[in-house]
Length: 72
Image (cartoon, rainbow, N blue to C red; front, side, top):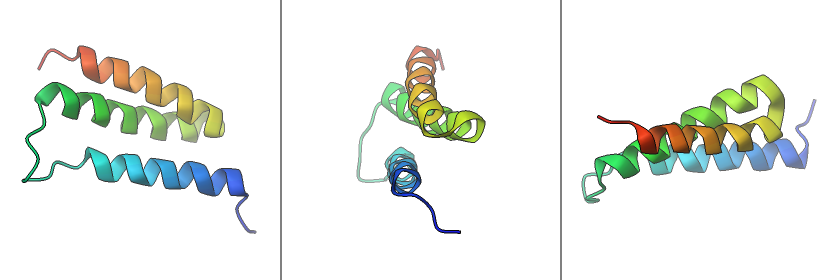
């Protein structure tokens, strides 16, 4: 069963976010930036699993906020 264009776009967006979340040695990102992007990736993944592409969008926002507010 082929995937719809919307599903493919969502999967591609999640893949790109995961790649961007990986720490690269040449980049000097702050810990807060890494936490924010990592939280967005995790939130988007969980949101997608729970309720599809709309959940992925909401999960990414909530995850980014949680990652940004993380103390350590």
